[in-house]
Length: 105
Image (cartoon, rainbow, N blue to C red; front, top):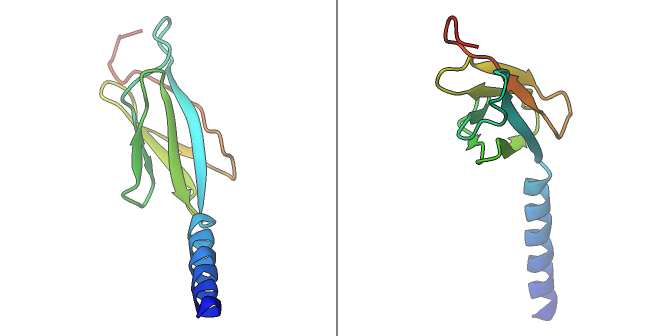
């Protein structure tokens, strides 16, 4: 009986490790290109082609678990131009967003 329980625990542990190994944690900071603006809170960060997403905190920082094989993050915010960033194996992706409002700088 003990061997059966040990075997079940082993298989469950291997399954959890396999699931966790299929994602990568990507972090970063989103800032504004407008002088004096700095970090942008509330930016939506999504993994292209999925429904996975996160928001930046009050310091403009985010973290998101990216599935293996995902290549691009999309950053969007009202009043800013939506940007795409290639992950390229990086664990830190920082972005500077540009204003989409004409004549505002």
